[in-house]
Image 1 (cartoon, rainbow, N blue to C red):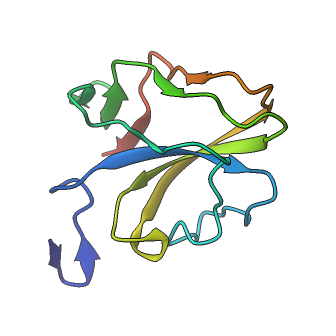
Image 2: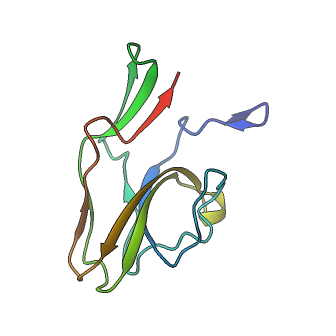
Amino acid sequence: MSSGGTTNLWAAGTILARLVLASGAATSKDSTSMTGLTAATGTTDQSLVSGNMTKTTDNTNDRVVFDNTGDLTWSAVTAGSVINRVVIYKDGANDAARVPLSVYDCNITSNGSDITGTFSADGVIYLQQ
């Protein structure tokens, strides 16, 4: 899994998405874990790798694009939950071992119904080569 002090995030494991409460810790480019990034009450983090995650090398734009072909649905999110981020992360044994990969800002106050996340046709994450 690791070599020379680096970790291969794509070698194995699960990539998940979490709805994060506005009251949770701030996310920065230096965040190394999901500690303090509180999930919206009553939600389960959603998997991006259950047969829907694709990886494409785009030589024209010199990047690798990771995409999810399906929408993500968080069911019956507790009414009044104020959500300001969706964080994509590599799963681990607990939040301290989970690695944030990307953050999407949003502004949602749940009314108790489902919340559906739809990613851009350009992909969920891309890495410049």
